[in-house]
Image (cartoon, rainbow, N blue to C red; front, top):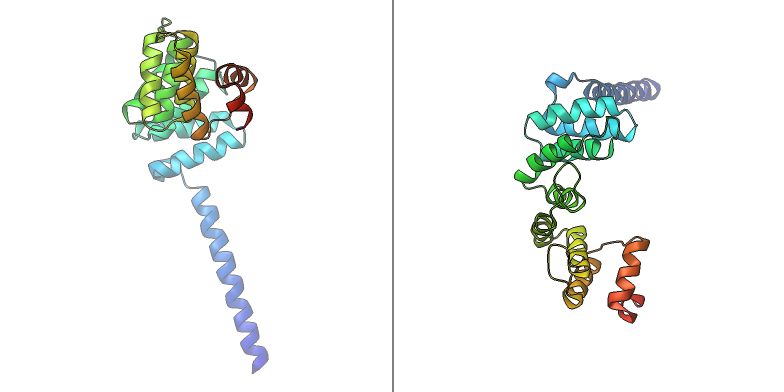
Length: 197
């Protein structure tokens, strides 16, 4: 009797495991038309992670058409940097703007980058400054750092090393991780204070 009970228990365990695996596989293979906006976005992220940019583009576009700001932002990145698509600043700007209109802080920041460098738009330091201020006010560390750069360089704002230092500090406190060029500016403006961070 014990052997029969153990056999039945083992059989139930196998069916449960198989059933769970089958359900997960079925969800992963669900046609895009049956996916929710979030599932389309996640499928885009997974495809991009696997470097299947064609699939990522497809999923992101479907999710973006349904109003997903994260997908719009990721499409902006793909076109901005030519990742899996031909680089197209105009399309990048379009997707960043759509995502920014839906409140994407990262998209607002990247609009600032495009205006600062004149990627697909006429270079406009004032617009870059405005975008970075909007993103910084919403807690974006990169926006805070870029505001510091505006004051450091005198681009979009009057050159003011005290204000640059203030924004650099805020960026570092918010978790901004500077690259080598950023570090040189931080050392120049913050001096020994930066060395201690």
